[in-house]
Length: 280
Length: 280
Image (cartoon, rainbow over all chains, first blue to last red):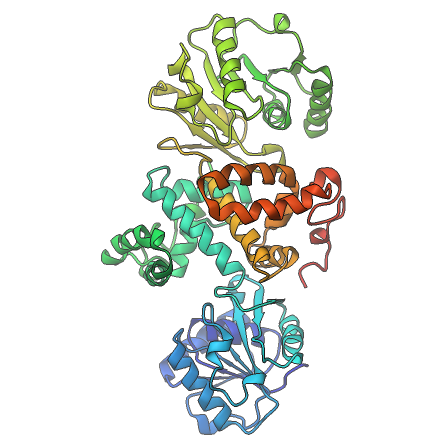
């Protein structure tokens, strides 16, 4: 095994996905979160995914193993909060050789690690949603990351049944998320322009690709409030995204947030696109 | 049956795809082309696809049935040539109630039909590649198309085992091709920026979506010469596409045209992405 003492910080959506995938491969992992309630949710989801397992849930830093060799922080997607957690990690654990990672879909490792003493041991390590079958893991070193680290993380990624993708340079949103954003942008634009409705666009996508879900089904899964926030951030760089804000706001104002609220572009738990006659 | 006397004009790539799909459902269809050689190629491909069938191949207009009720022209993607073929159709056949369609991926029906006497019987009818499993057919009427025509074409599309998608208004490149273009643009941009190479991008796509092919495998199938031509046309509207021209030119100059030349981003007939260890 590449790593023997793994710690995940943050038991949110992505912390659960990562811990669940590791646990499923029989590897011991500790999950830390300040919230007992969030740890309870994590335990339930992970047990549902892989049955009995050896995940250890902690809400007290004193109870953590002292010498982790891999730490993946997966706290909220905010530069300052992540930097504070990274500062705490290198201060608290007494292991100069540990590998420290951030699971982030948008923040660059050179910026996250700017003030770190163990900067050379740091790398971005971006999971999609392995428990849902999205098997790619992006490994994005910055210029000062030790050369062995992408190799170690690639090995570990394979040990937990996933596919490593080492990026050649830092780039916001990595590979797949960039392409996914392009799909979403174009799909939303076609609806705004009145060319086709959301269901027809999903039909076009599913009928031609053979996939079980289309762009608007995916947006419902991501959450339309999240899509709105992402669109706001992206509209700062590209004003062509502005109509997208109005588009998502209509749904969010009505409480239609997607799968989690039971209603988005589709109605859940039995959305139209899962029905046999959707592709007719 | 919605139509009993179907004629396809043009036995190129798309004419073959459409005729093959119709023949597979036991429906009689005539295919006309001026080239005996092209008809021979069509016959071979269609027999390979669906065995014995009732397609009739003609290189002589005199030999065609006199009263087709559905004519699909699928000649080269050029406005003037298509308009000339449409003029010939309405002049030659003596059926005021026939449905006349153009299979086009980019040209608008209002422009194609501008000078037609039977303009109200005309509609764009865009197949993807049904023999390869791309099951969506776009039906794009213009403002003066008779209301019954999208309904007739929807019924017929279902009769030949495909999924009709009626567009609400004219829009170049329809739904799926618009999204596909967005995927290709972003993928090429990531390679040009040096973030990842073509294989890694395909890996990211295939590993997360579960599809058997990625954006660069698709480009090889489309043909890199075709991708170059499409990029040139699109760059006229959007100069951000200009680097894409240089990108595709590098391959075309070396004779690397994709599947058809045996070499593109991958080497054929056994491209890397078909190998078991591609997703590792």
